[in-house]
Amino acid sequence: MTTESAFETARAQLRTAVDQLGLSENDWQTLSTPRRILEVAVPLRRDNDKVEMYKGYRVQYSTTRGPSKGGVRFHPQIDLEETIALAMLMTWKCALTNLPFGGAKGGIAVDASTLSVRENERLTRRYTSEILPIIGPERDIPAPDVGTDERNMAWMMDTYSVNAGFSVPGVVTGKPIVLGGSLGRNSATGDGVAISTREALRMRGINPVGATVAIQGFGKVGYWAAVALENMGLKVVAVSDVNGAVIGFENVSQLWSHFLAHKNLNAPGTDRLSNLELLHLDVDVLIPAALSDSITGLSAVGIKAKIVVEGANAPTSPEGDAILNDKGILVVPDILANSGGVIVSYFEWVQDKQNYAWDGDEVRTNLNRILMKAFNEVEEMATSRKVTWREAAHMLGVARVAEAHKLRGLYP
Image 1: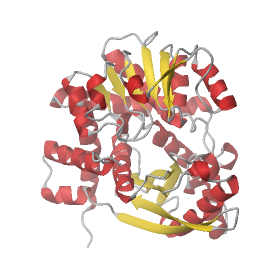
Image 2 (image 1 turned 90 degrees about the vertical axis):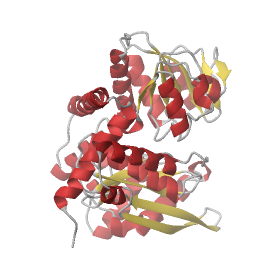
Image 3 (image 1 turned 180 degrees about the horizontal axis):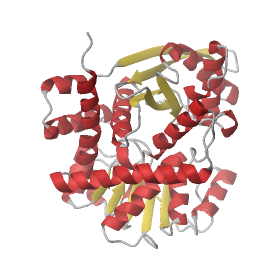
Image 4 (image 1 turned 180 degrees about the vertical axis):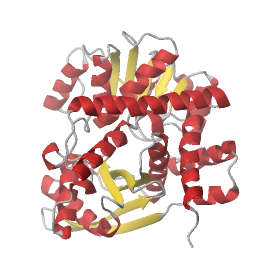
């Protein structure tokens, strides 16, 4: 965590939206308070029989518009404040895209790379058991996030189902296809980032074909965004992982093949850059798709990209945001740009409830339709209210949650 924490950033963004919408102090109190917070101890028996204890969290920020929805993150630096912040952002994201969900987030403070497969399974199942009373297809629906994948979701779904006494595929999303997962879910967040990039270029009058892109992060978001962007005709010129960045590769497929074989990005013919140097490349589009606070008051100064499309959650601090705005750089905010994952998670949840699978074309068509609607609404709000795209996106999401609170009333 940095001094520019995701928690303080999220609260500041909410405060701005509340003020711009003219909402009351009562509204602020309601909107700024998580509905439910669960902190659990998660014991793990390691393969050598040593028992270690980890902290786990599940935050249900809002259930006003429907069951809460959000990922499960395995990362050594997560804490309660960050989890609350990410659950808050999920709330506005679901409302912005008009999904019938509230926002949630959870996870364990652990480095997943240090776990064997069996240790990962035991930890996942024990964490699921600890949060079991508050999750369910009508209560709270976890999904993969940093450090977790469809394998973890399969274990979570099985643990919940064993306790229920029957199969409950809708308790999580991001599952393997054979367990009720949806076609297109693995690539959904990256696909949404690519759609947002294409539309942002259109707005700026730049032809997407041949436009240059640098992507910070080459994981589940960055990789799939790179693939989708290349398929649209854009040129991905640089990517990075935790060890640094590379340029000079022919295409993403060749780089990915090297990465799978050698566990690094140092493919023949590439040149190394630092992550900071990647942020400062002279490209049309910069996509931060790693962790939060990548673009800060220090790193934002050297950014030359015309457009920043946020693939990660909260990658830009308020100080960095102000600098980008002063430089006239269009920022497509995280709650819009990376919403493809939760949109297709919604499709998976619907398919599980109906016991009816969609084909890939139907998933892609509906993803594009929902994301384009939200994109156009943010563009219209930003233009009509003369605010930034981040402010417009938060105003739309916050306004919908506030309206739902008002219509439901206060019990008792």
